[in-house]
Image 1 (tube, rainbow, N blue to C red):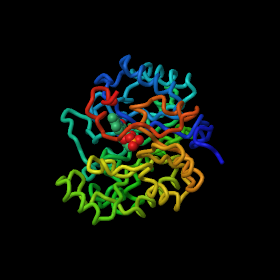
Image 2: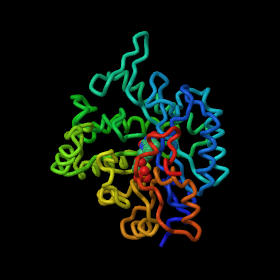
Image 3: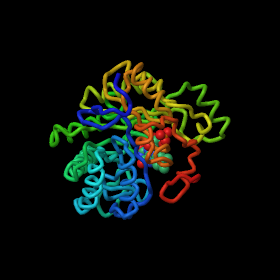
Image 4: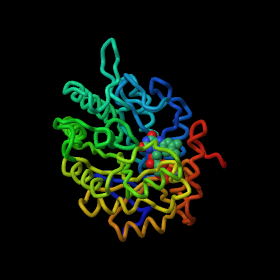
Amino acid sequence: MVRLMEPGELAGLSVKNHLVRSATWLGLCRPDGSLPPEVYEIYGRLAKGGVGTIITELTDVCGRNNAIGNNMRLYSDALLPDYRKLVDMVHECGAKIIPQLNMYQYVRPGIFRRMVDVDGLTAADLADIRDLYVAAAVRAKECGFDAVQLHLAYGWLLYRFLSPYYNHRRDEYGGSVENRCRLIVDIIEGIKAVLPAFPVGAKFSFYAKPVEEIRRLMRQQNVAAIPLSAYYATEECAAICQYLYENGLDFIEVLGDHSPWEHGNHYDSCYLPLAKAVRAVCSIPIVLTGCNNDPDKLEQIMADDGIAFFGLSWALIREPELPARWAQADRSPATCIHCDGCYQTVAHACRFL
Ligand SMILES: Cc1cc2nc3c(=O)[nH]c(=O)nc-3n(C[C@H](O)[C@H](O)[C@H](O)COP(=O)(O)O)c2cc1C
């Protein structure tokens, strides 16, 4: 049986263990996307802490808008020296590093920079979006990154393409699973056309729940940030992953609705049922994310469910050295309590240290 902290292969990449740092926005980059010393410090500690693969944070592929503020950006060649330095530093510690390519919304170039959502995008806009992703992937490869991850989670543009709640297009980019995946497949094919051996992964948050459960949660919390109809049936989530895999996607990171209304409801590896639903329909390499706290449970999942990689965000904010700890004698669970307090702090650090 392959163990959690032993070497493995993720989408053709030789990795030193089966732990993946799930993308974690630090809020520390300069507005132009260049990297200040604090970013190198945090990544240096993370890489030395023993995690096998690091997925950076949401990274703008386009310079015309900024996703969330002070996040990474790969829209310009001028940024390459900073990111190359980051990659080299992580590689020196034996870890792999992958940027998470993202577009907030499409901003049409020109004098009047107009933001356009899914339904209003023209064929020229769609081609521009594909080209922006491909150009960012090429930059990532030039910096030495080991792969790219497309951000299909948390309501950003590509997520909205997949969702029938946001996507009402009547052309070949809306309607069926195949059509809603089309822009993503265009991007994957565009990257593969210029970088055939460069792995392309994706992160997809499913928001998959029984409708009654969603209604109950909404009544209880009195919030409606995610509308009911934005949720997916688990089968449809699995069908999307299967379709993307058949069309060139190399790995998928899966998790459910990690929204505030679920806090207090988190339990170890809570999105395993979703990952199993994906595994049931295709053999795509899966990174299961969400409350992966207990190394013994993770090894059980590896043995029982054919899921070999595990994403961690919160736990590594509190304990960047957690992988090294698990690789040595101390296999006690991660000490993070999933309070989400780190999200409220500068540089997204644990409030209890
Ligand atoms: C401070 C913070 C920043 C995050 N930034 C990102 C991000 O840039 N991209 C992303 O896909 N997810 C982001 N996430 C979500 C995590 O990647 C992860 O999916 C989620 O926290 C669940 O995993 P966990 O239980 O191991 O924390 C962030 C989470 C935190 C706490």
